[in-house]
Length: 117
Figure 1 (cartoon, rainbow, N blue to C red):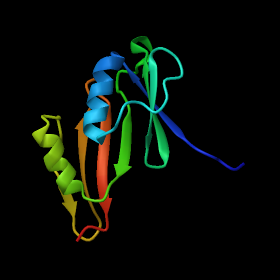
Figure 2 (cartoon, rainbow, N blue to C red):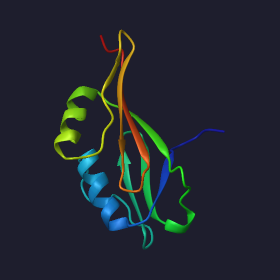
Figure 3 (cartoon, rainbow, N blue to C red):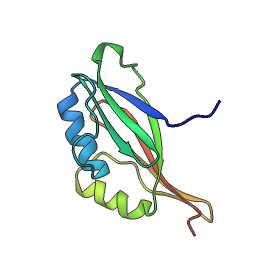
């Protein structure tokens, strides 16, 4: 099997609220695709991020997604300035720097930079 692409689906309670939050956090333009009412999709790196308004199907624990980025410290500062709920920035010497952010529905997004000094 040759996988041609991947889509990560996130169930949200309010698509309009989530659209604003994800566009601010990822610095995205409006959705790339709106296949049907209540679903929007963005191209984020090499994957598609799909937000789907389905409050009844959301699990209690939410989801956890992780994104590798170039400068995790700069993004931690930027998101903090946007009043996004973020965890402390963690540094593992010679390995990785990372932090988590929580979306309005309680889904956890992890951000990391590999090979940090």
